[in-house]
Length: 406
Image (cartoon, rainbow, N blue to C red; front, side, top):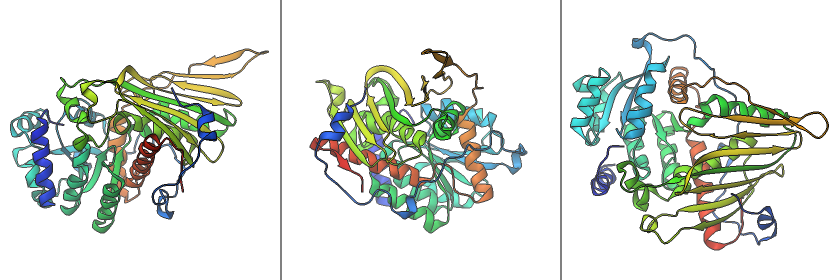
């Protein structure tokens, strides 16, 4: 996202609107339950097994045959992670920029060989329809703008890769999915961990039965939110972010519990807290929640904007355990696996897995899906599930009651 003032972001959003450590397991077992909301898993959201994507899409295509991306929003994540990742891509290339800061866009365009006619303002999305070199728009802006930018991209005839969370409400997510279907265009959500080798190995270990029956999962994500950092200013405004630590980094804990088990939760219990701190006038600081899964697995999860940097998960099974810490870092991961050894000793393994660019793998996966007209590994429906669960987590925290997922 561009380092814009909050008021400028709000004005742009208004323009787009006009134009188109875990909770104790005993808690979840003992508290009264309260079903809420519509069915979060209708038939078209049925869970599909996660299969590792092709490690290296074959073949590496010449530039003119690669799928062209337009990057919408030029904040730190776009400029420091996504744009540099195109150099590692084999099927995707960047061909256009969409920004509210013309000077910044021109400077970045020069770095990546993007011509002036391929630079667009936020108000010029309709011009994209005439640009056949752009097949995908990657939306990397504040959460509250995801819906309108996605709808504008679909209207221009483009596929969409949208950063997580899908939007600020499940109703917005549903609107985005319907719009994609009506336009016959793909919607993929930027769940980068699904394309990262260490996380893929953890998925394999959990689902293969090597760890035995999975009893508990603990997943924690936290950091200190810093209002002096332009990249954090919108994150503490509810109108822009939709929530606090849960929707920003807690979604990693939530999504990990789901992709490790391959299951959808049946019951949710939560607690939310914030210190007396001006950073948390509008959004929450810390959320703890527990998910019960059909197999009996309990996932104790947390997120916080008031902790030192934390991004980890641990899985405890009847035959072994695994710990990935960091689990969702941009560049480094550390996996430890405990298995039964001699006597009562636990044999500790630290497998050496090659770090690969999860950003490039994600971009290439989207490009493959466009070229082959297939459903992405992390489609809009995946983002909608998480959005619905996060709404239930907020509801459970507000009422102090566990929520039955119907």
